[in-house]
Amino acid sequence: MSDTTFIPQPLEEIIEDFEFLEGQEKLMHLLELSERLEDLPERLLSIRDKFEQVHECMSPVFIYAEMNGEIIEYFFDIPREAPTVRGFGMILSQGLTGLTPAEVLSVHPEFYLNIGLKEVISGQRLNGMGAILRYMKKLAEEKL
Image (cartoon, rainbow, N blue to C red):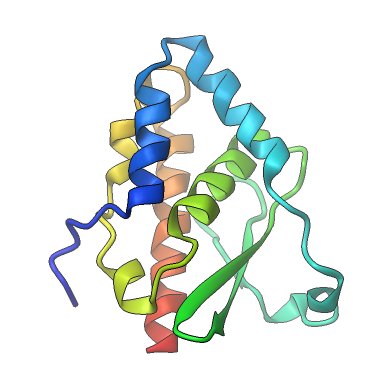
């Protein structure tokens, strides 16, 4: 396992976007991101029962990973009624797209604290992002 200090460029850009926002603007941006999280592709609906559930999240969050050449791709099933969590999913999807499993494993485990959301959402909700990242890392480890 690596030293977990890596923040990939796409994730760094997301963090920077949030740094320019203040207070409720951060929450609004997170909700906007939630709208951009794609629904499951139809080809994955038949294997939905094989998705990992992130039990630490208050909302039902399911993640599936598959390899596309050398990179890992993640697919999320998060209800639209949980826009904050969908926003987390979008941040992680966008921020980790194009990485190898080894790179995913090296992502800093608490990068999300740099986004500045702790001023607008509860710590328990913010911990959900950490839980989602841990599950994504677990799936990446299985792909090594």
